[in-house]
Length: 177
Image (cartoon, rainbow, N blue to C red; front, side, top):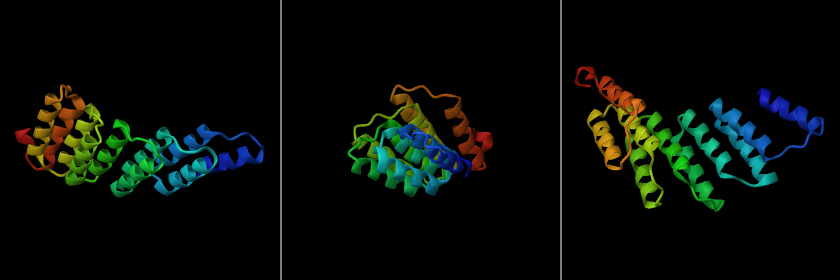
């Protein structure tokens, strides 16, 4: 990875490394969906500077991009172990990880955990739930999540409706959309 090479160059030239440096390295690995590399950088960051929610969120994003929802769930536990409180962003990342692999049950379980943690969902949360329904080819459930979104006084977006149409298309019912 080029990011690792630049880091080696920085340290070789005795450039001061800080938490932001590690954050950017975690981000680079996350964008490449390289969970193991992101975790390696996060461990180094923790060793030198401690953890923060931004870097942990980036780690969750890496898990979602890599299609590893179980790993994303484990990172929420690590956030809590670090005595940090997961917020809407972190829960959304885990729900999105389950949505991307079409695990509607997993996404719903994390939605319930979010509610039981008194963390409020936002439009992104509901969009991820609609997307989970689409990936699981469950268009009727997708419609229910759009209704729940409205009931929560949140406005569906183009992304919401795109996922809803996709739920019908994936289920072979594009004409019903």
